Length: 206
Image: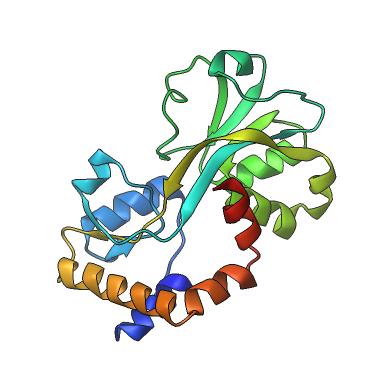
């Protein structure tokens, strides 16, 4: 909604297609069929492929876990006994990929949340808002079986990223920024955040 509305105010019409993340990045960086991608985190590698917009809002990265696991994150060493789900192609928090953990790598966050709810995983590395949305939408009874684990591992801002190979790439990136400033100024941005019950998550974590 935010991306579409921001572009509407700048005179662009947005069409969105959904893919597993690794494929989405690969297709978007080509700049052929798709102009860009959202909402990626910013990495040095990705900045070589994409022009990044102004930030949207923070992604709160951490673990959902089974409630019977009584643990507070202190270091990755403490997580070695547990089976942890992650998603292929994500820019994970520092140290996670290199840690010697029992990891199950899948294509989609929804797969991980499903396996967590069914007890096939002990923990899942995921954006807090994404995880909560998937639970509410697909596994509502699971809310009694899992917990968000404090503290969060990382806060990363999310962006719209336009392929450097796309036609008029700078203009398309700048058009989004103009629209984003407009909807932040006229209250539409906050309305969307409140509509989807994100205010409490963002304020509580930041």
